[in-house]
Length: 215
Image 1 (spheres, rainbow, N blue to C red):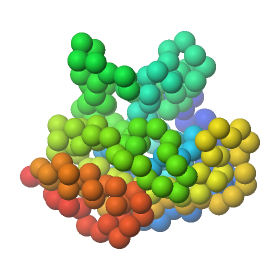
Image 2 (tube, helix red, strand yellow; image 1 turned 90 degrees about the vertical axis):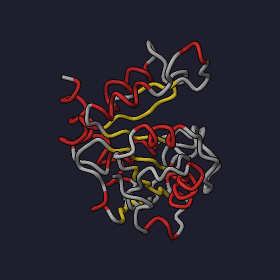
Image 3 (cartoon, rainbow, N blue to C red; image 1 turned 45 degrees about the vertical axis):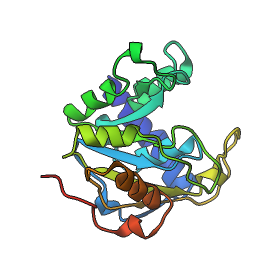
Image 4 (cartoon, helix red, strand yellow; image 1 turned 180 degrees about the vertical axis):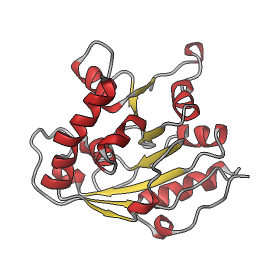
């Protein structure tokens, strides 16, 4: 039932809203992974960003998608939490993690080990419109744990104007998603994160080749 619910939500709400109302333009869509495991990373300025990444896939493909969500914001028992889990396959991550809480990325690893596709915003929260903030180390930790899993950067633009932070009503403006070449863990955390940041900012690395192929 959850997969059927997700598929119909994708068909009746997500794709018409993002591809129709927002007129989403997609560049290099052929680079999207159609099977997992894979990690999609994107810049984050709007609540529509998650919808945009889901709209890149067909309704039958949504069962593979799992959005990484802040556990404190999309908490169990809330309507937001229910929507996040049932519609977006949310994997909660504790932003206020402490060592006693155990491995904060265990849920993400389970998704990848099961062949799923993770959606992750490495800035950690919605940032300043038009800018890419500092990336958190979580994506590098996951890439190091799963070096054969591709990390695909997707530069989103326009959603910060359509539904900026604290806005309620979306504006009928255009948006775009540019899918970058997949990256693999290179062994150099700083270089790996720098390439992802450049790709998310829409720089020349967005259309370049992967920095390294997994052995």
